[in-house]
Length: 440
Image 1: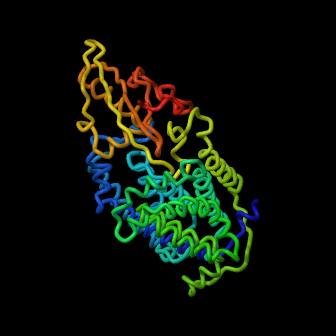
Image 2: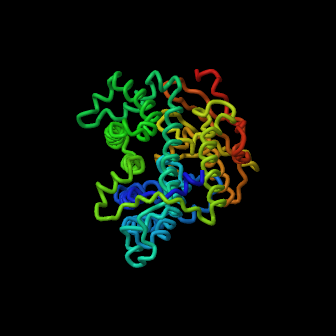
Image 3: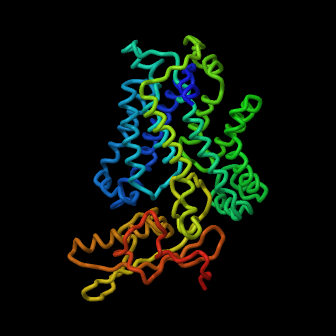
């Protein structure tokens, strides 16, 4: 393993990837401000639904989030030009991770992936060539890199795509009912809106998605199919970019092709003036044992996390337990309605709750279907009334439907969620089973 990981190869792919990566995160950061995303998700709400356990991040919520995204945009520029690379990459990673953990209303697997990739990039020797750092300090200049620098991205993307493919192999996806629901919201798209409603298109999207996700990495790794796989990737990711509007992810995915093509090809296309490294020397660093431990542990975690939903009771599509951090992308459509009943424990008076007094419309849609968010809002209500000197109970009446299935009750209406502890490592008993009878 040491010879594979620490064998040196030409670093042209990593240098070009750094430039593209920096440019894309600059666009992601600044674009989030100018499109109003930061305002809608992180500034206007009274509070955000952070990942449970990260409540302390609420201190940043509000106008200060504009500062976060401006700093991330500046970091992106510095990364692109290779200036103060390590510090710039670390700054972006911390800021992006904070904003990711701070809100779940706009949860996106691609945001999680960007957090992981940013953390990996902190340790990459990506500023060794064609960078301000190398110009200011020629001693760091290098035309090679250890092979692990490339392999870590290949393995990460293999995990992402493989789990994304496997997750789609379930009845509602295979019969295209999920795709049909997803495409209904695209009906008004110019030129292709009506086309996206055709059943044969739904089958292409459903089965094409499974085949693409499951085979694209092996096809890119095998030289005879590499070029065709890349061409298919271009169409696939541009389609996703236009139809699903998933930010920089499609273009970032295309950029990963740099690590699948031969270094000499990338060198010839982008860095002809750079000397090409051909020595294939193996350099074992002094910290090899620490590196191997971190490397192996990281990928064990990455392989294990998407499997955790199998250890929870009931269907993950219903409970959402183990859904996040698992590459379960665009798998289902959920809708429903949820109401909260607050009771003053001293007087037994029922206090009406209007969700519009507390939440934005997007947050209301989230709190209508996601169990952990429902629990968090019950806790928020408890704290809000505690500030007024009141001790309350919070009961929830929630009915949801998953995909084209009938509406069912999600939460046990007799459980006081305000005084129920969150148990992250076991099934929440206040969730009613998905096998219950449909609503009448």
